[in-house]
Image 1: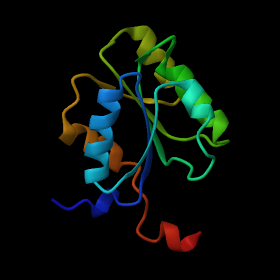
Image 2: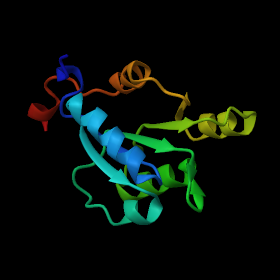
Image 3: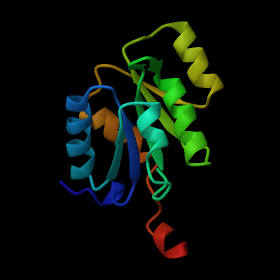
Length: 133
């Protein structure tokens, strides 16, 4: 399978479970993405400011916080309104409303790899993006 369509995309993966982070890193790396990882806001704040993620994938239920808070921390840390996708099993109206207010897409669990890839592909870099910088 080719991964060139996602090649070079920098994705910040946020989950409080390291096994999930490991699996997500393996999947995304296989698609050509560069993966940054964090278990929550404390780790996000200690990430280097370069590279800046092109996309944030955040689990909703984190230890002591939620994915919305982690996305806000990442956007503040990287000083950029980074597109984000919240991955959650919570289908409540409150979560959907907050996602809309914060301009965060939502993928409901369980998420199949093909569905995740399709969602991520909306944020892929144009072929000449690196050359233009």
